Image (cartoon, rainbow, N blue to C red; front, side, top):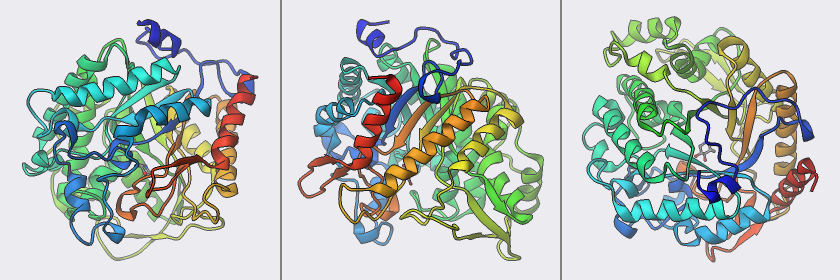
Length: 455
Ligand code: IFM
């Protein structure tokens, strides 16, 4: 362990920490407060230092895909302002930073040797975190597939999972001495289904059989990468999970959103009811080969949970295979129309422990977009965060081994197909000037961390 890493609390042990005892502030010993971002949403500099084209460059530059035709070309210009952003985190008492590595900066066409300038950028960034006492949590895939791989079939083909493992090995070798917490995949459901059924996200495909193949290949990519990432680190993946409310359709939506990912990762099997449903409509899912589920479930040192809201559904005799419709959120909703329900977080976490297994949980994303009346006075976001942290304390009290909490997001940023209008940041970004201003929610978070730490 390097001295810098030791200062940032890097552990040298490969095994997940033992089940924590309750400590100050209702969180276990070793618990850390963090923030999260993703490369394409903040970095900009899409043509610099040898970065290749990603599916999000292509998708956002295709008219009609993103509101107002916005793109991540400049975003928060974090590629140039990373040191200022790390200073900002340190000033907010942030203890962990979940960031993502852009695959096309490391391998511009998704295969072949590493682009040294890409590696150098992330090394500078990680060393900058460690110098400030901030723990790095590196995500390897937050949706920016090299376009060259998409041109060969993207997540619809098995080869992409194999290429991903090569990329993971490159990054693990290059940064394994300074990073020991790895998230392979962010939100496989979004990648597979929003990207390949609804076409709302890159690559904008609308084809169920491709989406089902993609869902399997994304999970396989996790499994293959987990085998080659440093053995002395910890590996997980981040699933977006929601409790589902509604009639019979809730079981199908739960299978589609939650169990299709939880079951293979934590049980080594796809849920029988969903396999039956999908195969009944689309025929055998022959992308799933012997041994794949063993690969997918072999190494999950912690589970990343992205939690925002519950979902409501009702049966609808329409479109196969799910035959359901999503209903609007009830009660308080955020700017995205997402229902505010902190208890849903407790439900999700307790369910993982009782129905699957007791494993370390990182809340890898939680937060809210609001159309703030004032750019920095954001009482609704503060209330959202406070209520969800309280919910997390209840989950801890019920025995869930919660080890990290990362607010989504540090900065207002490129919110995918919504462009820059949906602001999730606890720090306001003026996209004309790139000036960052902490919102009241950021100051509240800073003070809450200080309070828990007895500072
Ligand atoms: O901005 C996204 C993030 O990239 C993935 N999880 C949900 C966030 C809010 O929509």
